[in-house]
Length: 205
Image (cartoon, rainbow, N blue to C red; front, side, top):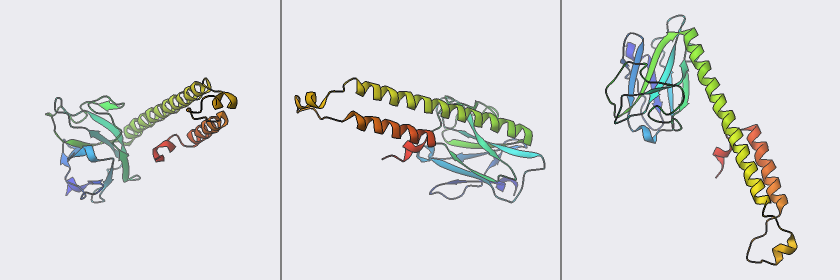
């Protein structure tokens, strides 16, 4: 069956392959209870491959009780890349995020469930759109790293402004005394970890 060309996996749920046609080159599927989803996997089932010179752009839309779906570009699929995992928990809703294409699947009625859309396009168009998406992602990551570094620097400078000598600390035993060397070591360690992996903080407890 042609509508079994694509599949979706949501952790803890059965595989979904019930994509519906939305024109000759577009497919849509609904995802209920999307608020509880962190990641989705979209893949080619192997029943049908992309035609030569074609690939697929993968979109996601949050349900909006007041407006038709606004689709955000997640990435792409191709015969050479038949599956991909996408994080959707950090996407902004209702068209507030980057790379939003309001109606790539035509104007639709208000939807109360999330949707995944796949649009089959010439592979050069897919590559171009994916490059734009990746460039925006890298730009956002660089801004986040800069913001984090400035925040840590501000915290370090702020704490330093309250530094006292050990003698002064003894005069006020009710206030805990933290050596400035400990703050400095933490600051330098944080910066090194951030440079190696901007997402290291996600594993912190």
